[in-house]
Image (cartoon, rainbow, N blue to C red; front, side):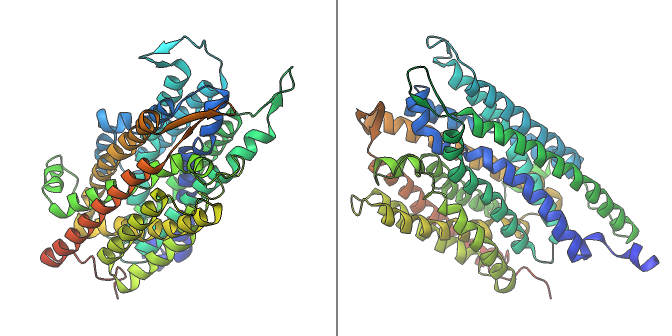
Length: 462
């Protein structure tokens, strides 16, 4: 019995993988709502009379509070000060509140002339809900990253992070594949016999799912408390507490900034692309709008399979910086092919999307487990928060940029009540982000060789 008490809880494989399942499910719920509006863009324009600028404004709201009010940075500091249980629980509640406001906005009817800050009331309220949700899901994200380091450090760290990301990507896949069929299934005919899809229904489903995900995180908190007790029983000294001056230690670290820049450039070419991918399938590849989310849905499916595989590879043989460089090269190839006026057929788009799935797996599987090699564990919450803050500039600005570019330079004639768009210029913009990510990746590899972070070394300690 004494031996059992002395054994740390995270030494148990069954326990640490069970804990991973709980927190990964919470992230799956969050990612479902993050991308649920993407396949609905054509419906929003036809049924609710949104345009691409409205949609870009709404999508950019994800980063409003995280960027301008520094909520992510404050969240990281609170995480390092107060711990994962307190921070994660409140962040989950914020996700639910934000989703509820978003559902209210989409489910309600507003006067067409009613505006807030120059935007339609419905668009503004939906964006506000998405902004609140963005604070919650991003803070949950950094909390989950710190939880995984806490339970898997010196063990299968990259594999665990890869599996968590894969589970989260299932949420993206479900959003891309199920959203339109769900809206269609619950749709109704008006008195003139015109069919109207039920756009709020997928968001209501997300709200229910988020409540379940929040319960899953609350269950995790009991195991986290037991882990702390097992660490104390093992006689492990508590880490030196986080101090505010540690922020300056983080931001003066060149390796940190290279990871942060690679993160924002890479994700700016992926997540904003996903927001427009279903519409791209309709506009360029002539896919039926009811099936348009299926092809982009292949992207996270590929990541679901490959991210743990590449994470396990990083755990065992290293080569983290090299994996990030390879993923950036694939990103450039993919968006260049999307931009070129060739093979405008569904099967070619499918092949390109599968390749993007490889890139979407390579970079994150190496990038996130590399942060603990550069930053001390007591500073990890703030470090991840700062990286996510930099990332949110891209997640906020790029969707708005793409929406503005489409509305200003790429709009075509209206067909069947919905506008048409030429996606060549937006895809070229995404390709440029890939080029910049490649440059940063090469720079990071050189810095690792100079400073000896160990990015090319395996994670599992023999």
